[in-house]
Image (cartoon, rainbow, N blue to C red; front, side):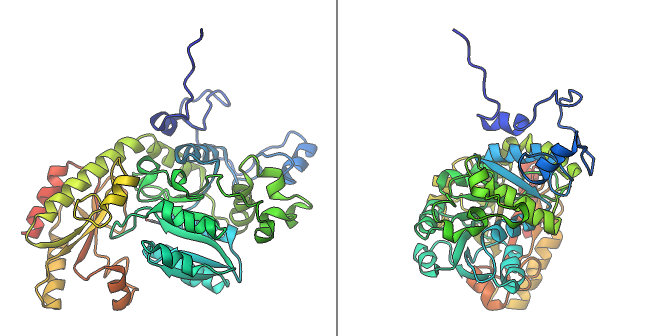
Length: 438
Ligand SMILES: *Cc1c(COP(=O)(O)O)cnc(C)c1O
């Protein structure tokens, strides 16, 4: 009897260090090398012709594909349990590519109104001006998702854990409504990371990330990724998805779904050959390398981030200067049951708290300013998911462009302070908050 050899992509901790890379292909480098080359040499014109016509897959030019980037893509696909992934220059580019691959002028998207502000800007303004319409719904209201569907709807879009209030999506409930409407569910899994939840296991069809945040974790490289879980059958309703089921004009009579559907590559090849190619939203080899370095410790970091954030949330919850803590891991949170169901390993480290009000708006503003300016270990930075703990004041920073009514609707008060808890000693973070609140 032979002892089975472990599959390097089967367990999360092994996959985050090894998936997608086979040493020996170049100089036997144990670590994935940075392939810093804009172009690739073809052995013959016949081969070049095949690659250009998508008859065979290969590297052409680093705007579209690069070997370091390819390892990053395969590793993320393995960690999310997806069929394939495409890396892009930022989380914004990932959201744009995922939506543009499914919807064009005259089409419609249903999105959670709790979405990240940059995604709202993208949908409402840039994609809106291209003729893609959007309806925002409260992500907890399943009927609202259903009622928003139109014949022209092409996708649902939501986040697993939202920012700044850390509400948690019932992925399965929204996926079921999307599938009943015949459209895929896109989930932005940036705040959770695939270590805390794999949305594809709960019905999401496409998962996107701002890799800038927890995936890198070091705060030195921007990046984004779109993962095709492979669960959505674009061939089942060909009239609705002509981009996959009719000849792709750039490649003669090639039909993406026929040629690449079975391999799970139709969506990622469409995104690469269309949007990354046309808009140039490339993830550079150097950034791919930096994101791969971060990925190797993703599980350990997410455990620390989640545990420290929950400890800080518990400290804040009992503090007399704090009115409310928006952390879904607290028993008092309306999303506690959803969190236990989808995030048994932890609820990540982005959450908010509201300072107690004085009844005087100006005095409240001064108090918010005093608390934030008094923090010494926790830094005032507009970012999340970094090794450093960071604070942000949504009403005057990331959510400044929202009207007072939109802020109220989103549950954000002028007294709301957002934290992204890093990897420092949790007792230092609690002590820092204690002195600032005092
Ligand atoms: C930061 C962020 C984005 C945008 O990502 P960039 O890499 O900054 O372009 C998208 N979604 C969420 C949830 C984010 O936190």
